[in-house]
Image 1: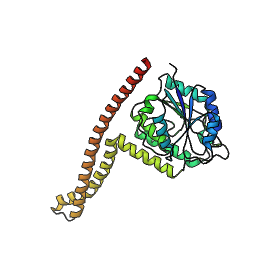
Image 2 (image 1 turned 90 degrees about the horizontal axis):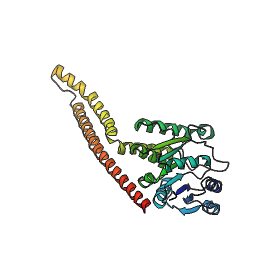
Image 3 (image 1 turned 30 degrees about the vertical axis):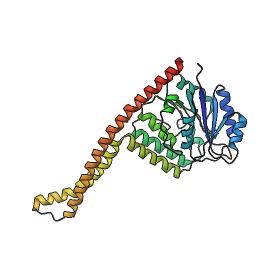
Image 4 (image 1 turned 180 degrees about the horizontal axis):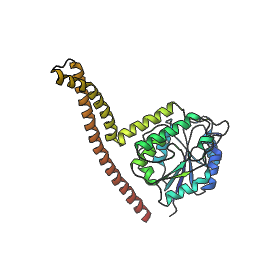
Length: 314
């Protein structure tokens, strides 16, 4: 049975580039279905995409994460290729990325911009800094060596798409899916791709500051959810350190004089010590829950795979 490929293009006001993007990927992946999900565009993006041969659908909740959620829920395929509608990613890598998924070598293929031309092509210096910062944080926290965390050029297996709980609403979606893939031990492959900046007249929808803050907030939230013991141990250590700083001088003075002249400091020190202990216990309990959730997730993936095998046999 021929395997199905779906090309996913989330769009918001990409009238200048969407026709070329659709035609490029129809050329290199003629057997694929090209889906353009329009996210409240006002420049006729949907009509241009339809005329170019794409299947056009609509997501009225604003934000890239909302669009990806609808795409992943609505579309059934064996391989999903996600690209942006701004014509910044090369079509030449599409076939290789899809083959890696279809041949079972990867559950997620990451089109790595940062190892090629991104820093010379991209004209927004704070975007460059943000990409480096996010890469450093995630690789340190989750002990990995992914080169491009926030690229919008990716290929996915059906198993990943149908097992990924999309919670992000905006541009933090790429960060969320990367962390999810690392945490759940999916097969990841990175290939360098040649990035080119947006053509003249095409405007980025990414706000450097507000979206950058959302990405950092997402990293902190997912750090807490995926590695709660580590997260709460850090906070517990801070409270314990404050407790020792306040409490040790009081204890030393007591052993010297038999008096406790700074009683409020002792009380605050004890409170901080209790908080530190509670945070440490919280981290342990949540880590046990996370481990149990991972076990349940693995069972879910086994069930998903068995259903897929049954459908193939039929």
